[in-house]
Image (cartoon, rainbow, N blue to C red):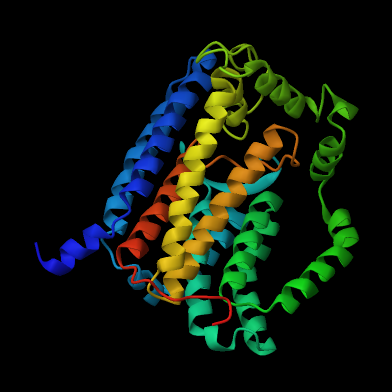
Length: 370
């Protein structure tokens, strides 16, 4: 093995990979308990296949120079937007949003893969315009480029996923050196536009905000899910009731227990210890991702891994928060844990991209003042 190849493997982040593998295995274990009462192994089989495919994708992607994806950013951006357009014309509705494409018994959510494509595309576009990022014309170009797919997602309408996009795009711009004044201006504009945003929401979306403020307003209706989730997490106490033994989980009181509310299963059956163990694994993962972003050899790699980190943070914070009633319910799944083959596979592809960037890190001196 050449010295150069040995050097690459010395920079390989084994801790990040092992952490993701542990998260994936934990997800399969918790999913088996969440779906045990249904007597349906299809969820577990699909998740298991996605996990194995994800590991294969990680191994393949981390051996490809991530700069190759940067060179293809226009093509990736085009395909991403075509997928979102296809959803609008060919997609099927689920939970109020037309966000799935189904081909017979097979279905997938294109926006999950589009997240990866837009992170790559926006990172490269920022890289190419980094020197003049704070000039109004350049910033408008970047914002238009980044927010076209966000607009297409809002047309589905999938407000939760759109918020994920907005969050990681803003964080990528901030890390790339966007001036604070633009962040201040956008915050003021956001506050002013709140009334417009409110009237553009669907009825079920308004109900989620009302239920966040007072879940008891419709305890047997729209607030039922959050109330049952709180009961599940609270009843787990410190050590939990044990896998396959949770009352809310096993007796069917907890809706969406295998997807959006799977953290409630962890809280009930594995208790505070299980919940903290999961959060610690996430903290390790985020630390390793941020470390790669800070030491990346170029702006493209740094901003790309920053986008991946921001996407993960949003999902983790929002999902855990909504199960405890600390955030409004948005249908945002929990990375590596919630059921969903498309979601799991897309997350593992992101880890492969981060590992690829990490193998080529050279201690880039990168700051917001650059």
